[in-house]
Length: 244
Image (spheres, rainbow, N blue to C red):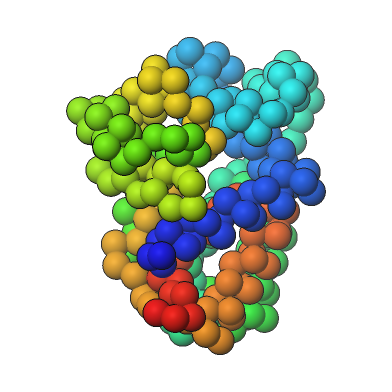
């Protein structure tokens, strides 16, 4: 199992836990709110909102919750004003870490994120200190459901997919930002039930870590992701299995 695949597996398991705790809905509602506030409440004219709604539906979020979040964002209902912030830093063993947050209190969030970095063996960096190590990519995940890599290749190659990985019964398709929507549409039109589709930060090069160092990095990522203001955490760590 590659480190990238192992991390994908870890993320899926964490998503299941988040869903059980209700934390996933909170993150999805924040994304819907930000998307609607920035691009308007019509998903037909707002690709980011349309994507956020699709992901919310995939997570079985009630339509009432989705519509309420949109109305709060567009001012039809009273709601919280959120701001998007990205923090950069280093974790144990010098791995690069990016933290995407959506918050209604910048001072609180930066203080909490800085504290978590410090407490769990890392340090906050300046803006731009690690972002250059990552590329913005589209990432689409879905269960294999009997499909082979050749089956998926036929669907997504012409649409502009960059990479396909199959691990633990799930496909992960990576795209350039420009072809993300085309690939997502191609999969949907082929009847593929997409579990999640989003723009993510993917490391250009990875750092191999295992054993105690791996546990420390995963602990820091866990604690960052547990913060209510944090939406996503990315690192350039390549998590190796013990036997590797």
